[in-house]
Length: 264
Ligand SMILES: [Zn+2]
Ligand SMILES: [Zn+2]
Image (tube, rainbow, N blue to C red; front, side, top):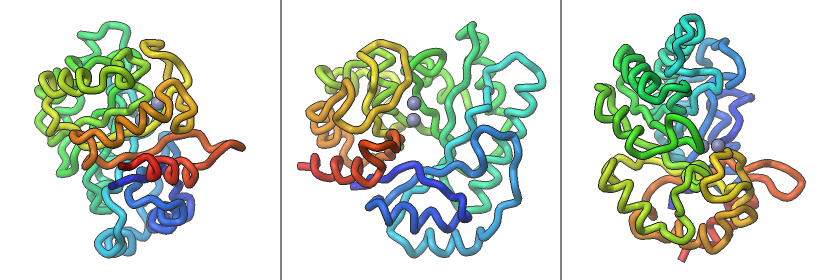
């Protein structure tokens, strides 16, 4: 199985390999720069990163975009910065030889205006990398139909990331009705579009629309929910990335061990 976590690259891009291996993972997600800043530094040690990416058993590596980006915004300055940021994100991915850039769709009170703004924005970006559109707990990205509206109207290559916490909080019951949720996703989006899973338990209940991650098994999805999810034949081959908390109870290493222990 492909299981990993969101890890730091504070000591340079190549440090992702040591960081992920030290916690027992074989795929990873990174921020290419501070996710709470608009600033980008020049990409350092790209050559070393590419070399190690070829050699090491760590794949895929995914870049997660900045929290500040909102492609659905009608605020001109925020939108301009968001576009500049997205272009930098894809440029960084190409320099590093990373295939996937994971983004949150963005927010706008008017879903229709927001969706069209996102489509328009993404169609103004050129890249060889894959865009991964992540579902959200609330707002524009919280319904499969809306994600499809985006993916079917954009020209860059794209797939979808399902976050288990977001899916559950959005009201899709992956605990008692996983088969139905997957059938629904398949008929709306097509399962072949599912390229990545963010594996997080949810602090809040089904349909709460609240995005608060919890350690695997300690939230509302629970241990049996994850056992069922991880072993589902339609999901077994999809890479899974943890974005669980790091606190006194556990870090990523412990959650990775727990997930591995659930595999049947
Ligand atoms: Zn996520
Ligand atoms: Zn989240």
